[in-house]
Amino acid sequence: MQKELHTGIDLAVALIKQDTLPALLNTATSQLQKAFGLTKCWALELDLSGRTLHCGQLGDTSEFDCGDFSHPFAHVLQTGQPRELTRAASYRLDHPGFQTLFDASDRPRSLWLEPLAGEDGRTLGILVLCGDHPDWQGIVGQPLYAGIKQLLVHQWISQLQTRDQVWQRRMLKRSLDHLHDAETLRQRCEQLAHTLVGNSEAMVNLRAQVVRAAGSQLSVLIQGETGCGKDVVARGIHDMSDRANGPMVVVNCAAIPDTLLESELFGHTKGAFSGADQAKEGLLAQANGGTLFLDEIGDMPMALQSKLLRVLESRQFRPLGARDEQHSDFRLVAATHQPLQEGIEDGRFRRDLFYRLSQFPLRVIPLRERTEDLEALSRHFIRLYTEREGSGPLGISSHALHTLAGYNFPGNVRELRNIVELACLQTPAGDDIQPEVLRLDDLFADAGPAMDASVEPKAMAGVPVADDIRDLKAAAQAFEAAIIRERLRQYGGNRAQAAESLGLPKRTLAHKCLKYQVTDV
Image 1 (cartoon, helix red, strand yellow):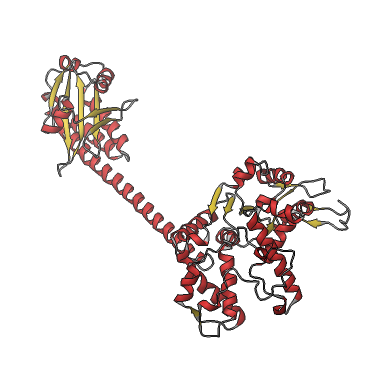
Image 2 (cartoon, helix red, strand yellow):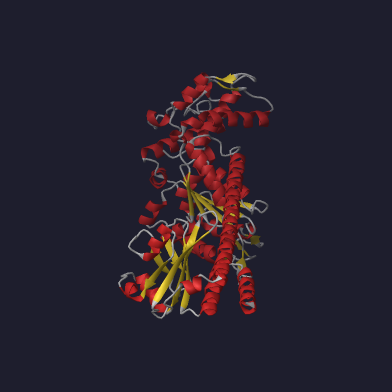
C-alpha cells in the first residue's frame, strides 16, 4: 500500500509539472505503461469540431474519422462507454491510421478503449491501453488507475483552458491591431483629403492606396492624364512616409533638355565638360534620405533610362567626370501621362525599367469620370484663392456647378482650378460664383492677338480681334498657345507629330505646353 501511494504521488507530481498538452499526454501514457506493464498506451485527442481523433504521439500523426460509426473509436465516443478490442477484431479493421497505431503497439492480444470526459460532459478523447492481459478489469479497477485518469482529465481540461485563453488573447490582439491599423488608415486618409480633394469612390480608394504606398519602400508609378494631380499624389506619398522630414526632389523629365538631364540627375565635377566651371551636386544626391519624384518619366531618353535602372538597383551613381561612385538613399516616385506600354512596344521605353518603376502602380482617374468631386474641388480652390488674395467669393452656386458638370475638362483638375480662379477674380467678394463668369475652354480670350490671314479660322477659335488687345506679350503667348492647342487636337494629342509639324523639338513643345498650360487632347 505504501509503495502504491508513493507511486501515485510520483505520477501525480509528474503530471502536474507538465505545462503543455502534448507533454502532459506523453507523460501520462508513459507512466501508465510503466505502472501497469502495458505493451503501449496512447491518448487520442478529439478536435474542436468533434469529428476527428488525433494521435499526436505517433511520428506521422494519425487521424481517425469519428463519423465512421463502424470504427470502434467512433462507437466508444458515441456510447461514452469503454470497450475491449481483441487482436482478431483489430485485423478486420481496414483503416490505415488504426493499423499504423496497432503496428506501433507491437500488435497486442487486446486493446482497452476508454473515453475521457470532463465533469461538464465535454469529451476530450480516448485512452488506448495495449497489452496481453486477458482481464482489463484488473487494471482499470485499481484505485491508482482511477486516480491517474481523474488527474489526467483535470490537467487536460486545464491545458485546454490555457490554450483557449492564449488563443483568445491572440485573437483579441489581432482584432485590436486591425482596429488600430484601420483607425490609422482612416486618420491618414482624412489628412490626405485636404489636398487630394473629393468624395467619389475613386478618390477614396486613391487616398487609401496612397497611404499604403507611403508605408512601404516600393517604387511607385503614378499614371494619369495631364492635369489630374499626379504631383499632388506624389507629395502625399512623401508626406505620409517615414521620409517626410527628408527632401522631396522633383525632376520634370520633359522640361529639361536631353543634353542637361543627365548632368542634372547625376551632377558633375569641375571641368567635366565645356562650361562646367564648378562642381555641381546632382538631384540624386540631393534626394538622399528623402523622395525623388521623376515627373513625365515617359520622356526620359533611352540612354539615360539604362543608367537610371542601374541606379535603382544599387542606389549607386557616378557624377559626370568623377572617378568614384556615390550612394544615395532615396525613395523613387515616378509619374507619366503617356501609356508606357505603347512606348515599350515602340522601343521608346525599357521594359525592365517599367517593371522596376511600377512596383506599386497608382492610377489617377480623370475628372470627367468623377464629376461628383466638382463641388468639393471648386470650394477647395475658392478657399485657396481667398486665403492667398485676402478676399474672394463665398462659394459657388448650384447653377454654376451644373454648368461645370456639363463640361468635359480635357485639362482635368488643373483646368478646373484655372477656371475657378478666373471666376473668383470676376465675382464680388462675399458672393457666389455664377455660371456667366465660368469661361470654359476660353482662358486666353481676353489677351488674344489679331487673327492672321494665313491661319485657318478653326485654329484661332476663341482668340479676339486686334482691337481687344491690351498686352502684346500676353497676346503673343495666347496666339502661340492657341496654335499648339489646335495642332495637338489635329494629331490626337500626339506631341511628337505636333512638334514635327511646327518645326519644334519635342522637348521644346513639352516645355511650352507646361508654360501655357496646354493640355493634350
